[in-house]
Amino acid sequence: MELFCTLILTGLIIALLWLLSLRSGRTLRLPPGPAALPVVGNLLQLDKRAPFKTLSQLSEKYGPVLTVYLGRQRTVVLVGYDAVKEALVDQADDFTGRGPLPLLIRATRGYGLAVSNGERWQQLRRFTLTTLRDFGMGRKRMEEWIQEEGRHLVARINETKAEAFDPTYFLSCTVSNVICCLVFGQRFRYDDDHFLSLLETISEMLRFFSSPWGQTYNVFPWIMERLPGQHHKLFARIEVLREFIVKKIQEHQETLDPNSPRDYIDCFLIRHHEEKHIPTSEFHFDNLVSTMLNLYLAGTETTSSTIRFMLNVLVRYPKIQEKMQQEIDSVIAQQRCPSMEDRKALPFTDAVLHEVQRFMDIIPMSLPHYSLRDFSFRGYTIPKATLIIPLLHSVLREEKHWETPWSFNPQHFLDQSGNFKKNPAFLPFAAGKRSCVGESLARMEIFLFGVSLLQNFTFSCPEGCDSVDLSPEYSSFGNLPRRYKIIATPRW
Image (cartoon, rainbow, N blue to C red; front, side):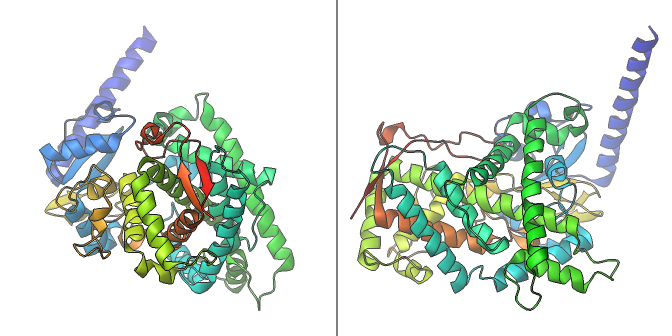
């Protein structure tokens, strides 16, 4: 009886606190939104496998700026290009905060670039952008690394001898090796078992993030930590990945030449030595390990999944594949590697690759932002500690910016003369001060790897093109493409 009374009292207190928070919301003039329940908020209203679709539908009633509650977390959702651009670009300083994603915090121990705010974020982002640029991101040196890795990929696919194979791990190895060259100063063999195990951890992490269980962890981490489940196994594997990164850092410490930095780790270690007497310096071991983990995770699975989705598209639409190959053949000689200079002469190919990214919509809700202080937006109050979701899905599917938003259509990026045209609503990497630090690298990889594959192979599916489903296999945090075995027939 006593326990029952305690439970009733606890429930009444929670309900009272919830009502007070809602009343406070009305006083603050929060953006409008649906009524929420105590504890669970609006979670029961959301499609657990595609919450971004529900949020888009809610905006039809409540407008492009609306409030929902993910559990007890007050969340403001920005819907459509105008609202997202106004927030992330025009009012950028107010929206630089990063939301506290429990899964990422657990994986990174709260350190690193992805989950940081304030001075830590400013120091790490500025350093990362400068260092990646110095080591070739978006420049000729990086282009040569990608071209070299492209040759390894073509050679490995040739070994399949036109028999059906799953391209997932080939592509993961290829893209990951580019990151490894940049941050570790080395590449790995495609048959390195330890390397493949680490790549599987990265893939499993994004799949878990995109599952209902992963989203539940982000909303109720204190409950999930006490429940059995696959997340405990995943966190154990992430620790193995951390150990791999720590080992690489230790190897760099032993062989470091301050006058000749080889990669990102060397540059960070040199900066750490220069600022070791500065109390406010963020260049310490914990931030290095977690930032390396950020770069490795973000730079591997998203780009490799995009290229894999491209292959699904080519198999599904063989006429598009044929037209791309004709254009590539007319510009690039058979034995020459594609270069970034070729892009201007390949407008249709470039349009298809942009449409692949738009239609895939890989991170539909972006990484959440966070209000670090009270501020106003479009006449509403956004209180401190509010989660903010720039709904990239709504930008990439907005009818006023895309003629056929729900269909795969390369004409979205072509003018009437067949020339490539930009679209301001093309924001797969988000926008503003929190946009993806590896955007220029990812764009380069998608173009060079994509053109190289089409230059050397014609892709088909053993079951026929009609069997390829372009809808995502996993959908929530990330829209991950379905896995198919494909056939790569050499063209020469």
